[in-house]
Image 1 (cartoon, rainbow, N blue to C red):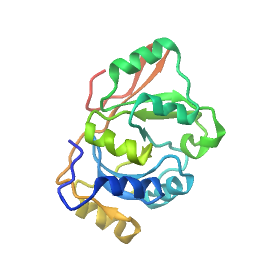
Image 2 (image 1 turned 180 degrees about the horizontal axis):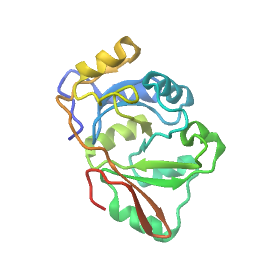
Image 3 (image 1 turned 90 degrees about the horizontal axis):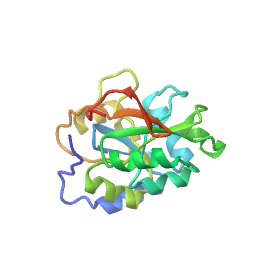
Length: 195
């Protein structure tokens, strides 16, 4: 699985700016096709929940360009955990961190935690540098099969998505999900990467 754009006419920086401004796009990520929206815009996040008919109590994973971006969410990690995070990222590993800041309740959905991921692929990290942090849950309504092509995603969402970016057939595994506390790792979901 990889972040790909098959259409050379698409300016990916322009797409990143659209996402930053609140538009919602379907594109490949480092795992599967995702419904991508700015994690810093509560209105865009709520539209994704509505589009996907997602459980309103279930937080989304936030993709970030670098570990420094967690500071945007008021997240502070202990020294031992930060060392471990630097050893793990970038990778298809999402790490659950404490986020008690109520300004981000639209992301943590009352759990007081957010899972973050720094993708391994540089092209996707470059996109995130432009767009800022994003949510990118799989491109399907909750309970349905994940779209493996933009055509399948279009069948699900039609004209409710601003832009579909073709990355070819995408049939990846989800990210591994872990939590870290004082440098101790707990695996919450085994995905593509063994931790």
